Image (cartoon, rainbow, N blue to C red; front, top):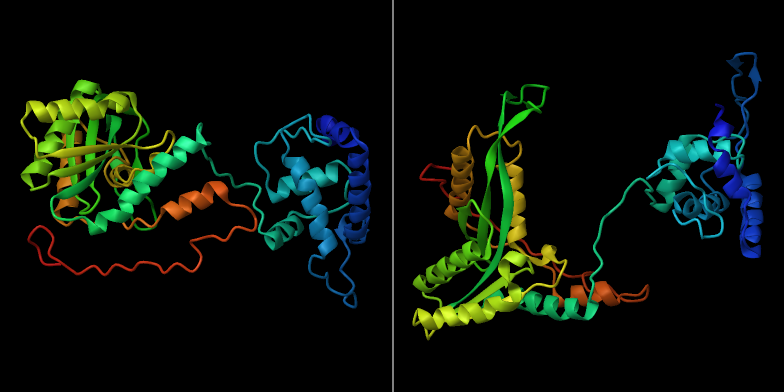
Length: 381
């Protein structure tokens, strides 16, 4: 099958102009193509002739070249057949060689190199091979209301009075213990290697609470993930916070079913009365739906994943639990609070911004943290 037969549907899509506006744009693009088509080098047989030394060097990409490419990129990336000119490309993402190949095959240019396309893309700071995932809030009003409460609490933490503490609470579920046959350490010029095959050794559930003001972590490992287990963890956390002299406790949690977020506040209030802790107040702050990035304990989970669970090679579930516990102890030996800079104004700007809205982060002084050298586990640094 030839290249033109392979992209037959693409060529048909290019010619299928569904509106007068599309026809005008196609004519405009054709004019731009004629203006930017690169001259081919003269050839003699199978040997390419040497370029004329008196010929001028190619000029930098002109505005018409950039505009030509920018006009066609949305069509190349389009996945909606209902939109005017739509190229039904069999690609999930594009690269400079692919774009150059398509432009040549569909007849838009006689000759063009991937390097030329790369130069145009670089000039406009466009990377069609890069993608970022995001989640759209289901209820924007509720998202802003809850998000502002949590961000305002984060901003107020450094000014907490004695006896007040805030904890970011969540669980890292189904941490699997995997026993690998072989694991080799990194060597000079070679990365470490780990066998891809493994034997499952079970899984554990990690419940953790990050002290927002201090940076220390209170955690428990369990084999199950239920509300009974979570409530046991929460009561242990409250008792620990009370033993440290706190009588105003803030719990920041997400909307996971294990937490029973709508009933958790009432359950804790009833438990405090039962325990005769009348002078203790616990405030449950529910994060918005789809906002795990606002939960600071997720940063700790990321560190745990990077430094303990990757690569995952644990001969038994007990070894896995021991490593997680030791990492938590190591983190708590010299805890540091997270340098949180995202504010209520940033969240407001994120959802209400327009092209003319100034970004509140521009000109904001960055925080610098000076870390003093301290001994680690009694050893000199």
